[in-house]
Amino acid sequence: MSGDNVVLARNTDQAPRSPYYSQTVAFSHYNNFSAQLPIDPKTGELVPGGVEKQAEQCFRNIRAIAESIGHSMNDVIRITVFVTNIEDVDAIDGVYRSYFPTYLPARTTVAVAALPMDASVFVEALLSNGEGTIPNAPQAGDLVKLTNNTANAPIDALSTQTVAFSHYNNISAQLPVDPKSGQIVVGGAREQAAQCLKNIKAILESIDVPFDDIVKTTVFLKSLSDIEAVDEAYARFFPDSGIARAVGYVPARTVIEASALPLHALVQIEAVVSHGDGTPPQAVEDRHGLIVEAANTANAPIDALSTQTVAFSHYNNISAQLPIDPETGTLVSGGVAEQTAQCLKNIKAIIESVGHAMGDAVKVNICLRNIEDLDAANEAYAAFFPEGKPARRVIGVGNLPMGALVQIDAIFGNAEGTPPTA
Image (cartoon, rainbow, N blue to C red):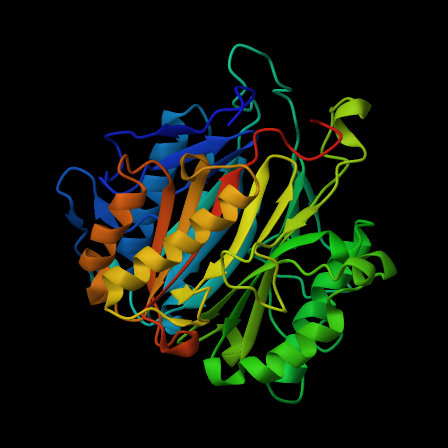
């Protein structure tokens, strides 16, 4: 990696530590936080009490990490709340309001099959990093967040539809709600997926951003058996423009089975979008003409509905990788350790194909079919990240494509940025 930007990993004793990940990993203008469990950093144990107490501890840990690096909760761009019981969301929201009384970040809420340490709630944060991470050279420290809501998409009292900072727009997860009626649309997963994508498109149109500026989507499904119906709808939206169709551009993508979604929805979709003009007060020569760079390599599995890596500005967004041997197209033999290693081998092949290395990783997201496999997965994981530098999230899901035991996606730094910054 060039010396222009650095992967800056940091930890504080005021929040739980782990040998497998760093609490926050900053690169360029974003801080990527590891998802926080409701662990008291003094005891290393889950806090006693119900979900409200656990949510309070998660947010307290996030605040401690943010303050340890000179930031505040107002610098949060996106919050993701994982629960094991969707009915706990109301109690969590009461805690959430106390941490975001005025400014509201983008947000995703989803119930999953299991969380580490049998926790009831797990909270992840993405923060702005106004000063950037270029060593010994000033970056604009007064970049501002741009927030926007439009009546053409569902408005939520606890989140902002889109929060832009520097060269990325972060879109709140969209449910299949018709903004006119405020109700879930009629139909099954296909119709619901289409409405989610319509809502995302409406949000982007409200800020004059093309749909094909999406660099990464995460699709949450109530049942993985609905994936074919969802993919039918998805393929009608991507590619969206003539230019994108000419090159067959599709964003990076992750598909996750949820145990439940808000409003009993079957589908929920979040998006990360390029923001070519940045946020003020960037100089014109630093703002315009940035391009989305999408790449695939035959050394990792290729999927018709996702691009393996989509780079924009200073980040590479990697599609979720299954433990598939790219030569055979089948799952590797063995248990979760072997499958974890194959997922990471695929990620390594992808990132090396675009001139980067595993040391450029800033965030890794792991889905395990069985959360009890975490120790075995960690053993394989440590061989690829011996210093435990990337931020990380681990969740348990009920099912994975092809019956896999593990699925991993990642975010990497892109030191040189994308043209014309090179």
